[in-house]
Image 1: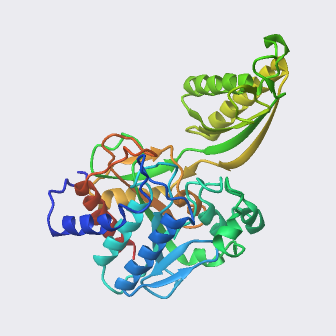
Image 2: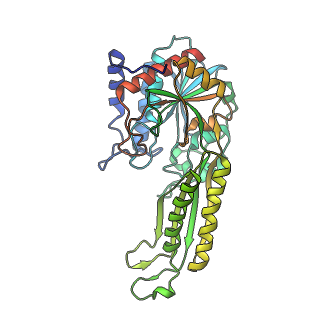
Image 3: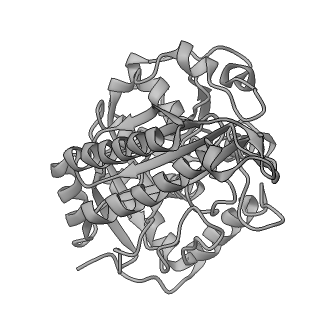
Length: 395
């Protein structure tokens, strides 16, 4: 049987109390949260993280990549189990995506014997909402991205990642192999989970591709329709192609970000830059999907008299979490369901180096990356209890 429903009590009020401390931070007037990496709201949450660690006599370290760690034992001691998540959000995102895993980690630590070796992590720039590369902190820690490349990444205001950090990132740390396991708790970002807590089996392969559509800027009122080389037309066609090809493949494709130059109502654009987010259940399907979109966009550009250049900004292959560990955790939690996810996570990056698992907390609407994202306090408390049970078993 799955993890039981919770009815409340002292632990419930403790979760509510701690959650209320961070709930107002970075809340946007128009709804949702603006907690971009290394901006004022996220830095406030980092200070909160240090305060929570101090209350528990945990040692806080930084790894030179923007990642924070609160240690219950000697830093990087062999056999330590890592848990935690991230603070940063997508633009106007929900409050649970990321922070729930950190709040739950501290509360789960409270339920463990003092001698258990555990570390709570807050990873930097998981969403990629500021510098464009998701899971940047965990990619740096594990050596997936070169520190020089990460340092040069710029946000929309031209600030580099190194400037935001205040130093050049350090890159990979071989001590990550001293960890015996990683367990990240996260709100489920779908409607598959019908009980309070589940266990992840895999993460779909996914990536982000920047598509630059170039044309000739001109006057909207004087340029004949037959004379136009309008990249917006090629872009609009590509949006529809991506949607169609994803549906046919049983995959996901989204173009949710676009930049236009000169971005004037009465001017034909000279450049339209759009970002394709594509995900699929397996790498072959993802490759075919992206290939089809690029091929049709290129063919259409030749008819429109425009150009298109495609740059893969980040691509993550399929992640299959440690199956034996997932089954063990499911059994430990009374037969909690095991399910895949289409969302990326730091746990997916870490899984190539350390036995890794994820716990999901039920999301009643399935809505995420949105102000409507929600989990009940009862389910969050069930998540804390499940995480504590798992950490105690693994340490």
